[in-house]
Amino acid sequence: MDATAPTGDQDREYQRDFYDRHYARRAAAARDQHVHPLFRSFNERAAARVLGAIGGGGWGPGRPPGRPPAVFEIGCGEGLLGSAIERLAAREGRALHYTGSDVSAAALDIARKVVSGELLVGDASQVAARLEPASQDLVVAKNLLHHLDDPASLLHTVRPLLAPGGRVVAFEPRLGCPQFLLFNVLAARRERHYFAGQRRNRAAFAAAGYRVVACDLFSWLPYELAFVIRPGLFRRLLATSDPRTIARVSSADDRLTEAIPAMACYAVWTAEADPTGEKS
Image (cartoon, rainbow, N blue to C red; front, side, top):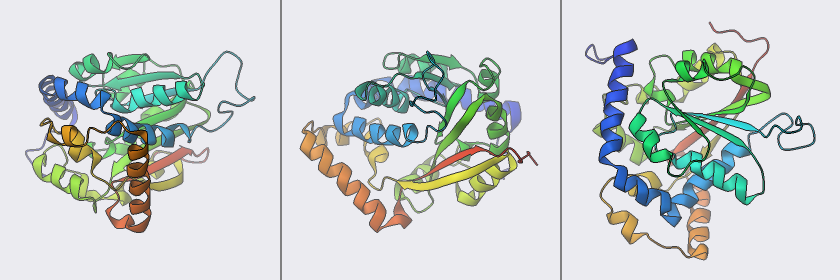
């Protein structure tokens, strides 16, 4: 690792300062992303992967009365995935309780405009200490583990939050995806563990006492390269609101992921606590 790269408290401070500046600069772009029909569809497809992982009683008759499933997203940023999770659950007539956390207060200022759940400032260990043990049916992390020097420590920290049958879902970028290779070149200091690959994630889950129950591929088209960057050219060019066009693009994305898996954007890890597992 680069000797100049920040670690420990310095790393958390660096991340907080960086993302506060980052989200302050891109607030207008974030507003565009939240309302862009095609990009909303991408995030709702990701949300479907999240909600499909709810284990245990789920929304079924085994759930204690009066307690909807609880979802805790670590590093929720500007609320793109969190708002999609809430939208999708509401569309299906399913109640849930969403909690999001982020080190950046500026990110949560944007998220509060679109997320109705609870939003907490702080890193995962700080926020986890404020949540009840065994209270979360899902813990979600998107684009997070590869930022961390010790992803197993994070996974171990949130493990006590899982309710019986609870799971962790982690979206992690894949090395073969051109858009993430570009992001890595442009943001090498923040992405210094990116090239460690998926073996690092599997080892982190095992070290934190989890059993990986699935690792699926998600998305092939460069949605995030096209829509997340601040210049709005792609958002304007691809500003369709036609449901049939959006459905065709989504279907093409799924077919390309299946046909050319080496270039898929994400590996979606689903894991549950292993009662025999211990952090090494």
